[in-house]
Length: 295
Image 1 (cartoon, rainbow, N blue to C red):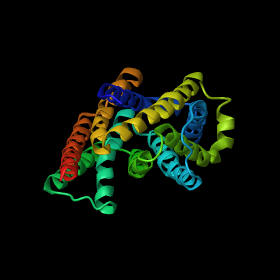
Image 2: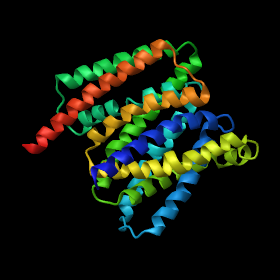
Image 3: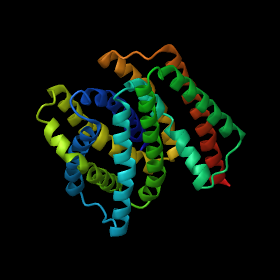
Image 4: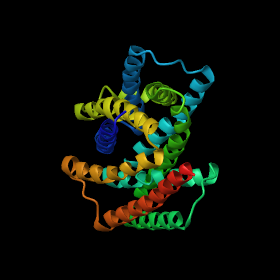
């Protein structure tokens, strides 16, 4: 895959995932967090079935499929339930800044469980990120409901980071579309516990909320996950993740244009400091990783 295609897929993924934070806020005007997640991934699952059966991908062994289903339950279901609950009280822009720290959490997981060798620069970046996160949380925590929402979004970031680390090993062995399909279906399977509430809410939800959920199921879910899987297969996860730092900026702009959500100045500064720290930490990690591969 050429670099132009990879960059195009990266840009597409960034825009679609940025728009999802706004779409969630719109969807929550008509759906509860669990119902919204189920509806979104029912749509995404149908899309993946059409794509999956249209092509002849290599067969994934049964045990690997079961692993991908379990991985989807953590990385898809838990992530989106927590994110949806968080965005009940937290704006799209602020939510995207917290989710933007996923590369830092991924780095910590790699250090703790994959025995990656950290250095002083990485620690400095991590500390800067934590300071920025604290500033952002303090600026936003004017009500207990916002505190709870921030905690839910942080849980989402942790589950998403675990998902990103675990997914890489499967992408080395299997087709990205096949891997994406089984993880999405696994996430959708767990979300079926919200079937009853979705059945009630879909009859009364406003049309904009329903259209927003359908959009998120097709584009930020199915299309973006496929694009991201191809990117992870083509380039190192640490290098790809750097592009995700643009998501909070794009999401904040979209939140302002579509929802008229304007983050406070301390929140914006805290978010930018957190992302700068994350960039320092993960950029150094990528440099170290590349150096190790050449030795």
